[in-house]
Image (cartoon, rainbow, N blue to C red; front, side, top):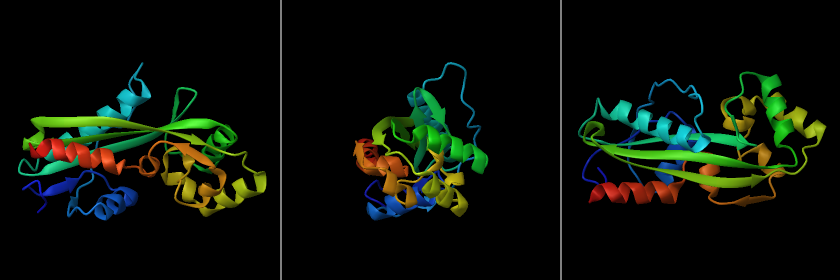
Length: 192
């Protein structure tokens, strides 16, 4: 039980989100949401991650009306284009080559819902990430690890790719997948 007075559920299978929420001092269970993550025609990146966060949280909350549920979704955006999780190493290489030497945005939508989804609050956090030029040999070494395949934009800031990131403007934890301070603030709003 948390200060919320209700069980807390994280509607995400992401190990990074589990780690961050646990480090923030919360006790919770995990129930990954199963939703369609397709982008809708004309949907802006910020709208997309907010919608998915809400759909994940509400989907899980429908079966757990006594709980507080957190949903989250993260995407990488370059020149207005959403770069999701790559389908294979070739697609990962293409994404990283495009990010090389550029600044891009990472958007994370977070939603907190209670009462089976009847009450909800949400937020979108944006962080600007600067990449150095990625040397070809380093890119090939990274791609060989397979680490790029389960991450939006084909990289994780907390791993090997950190060597290419000299600067971020915004929340570091957002780039990992869960803006912790914003999540705590949303949880606090639901205590009222």
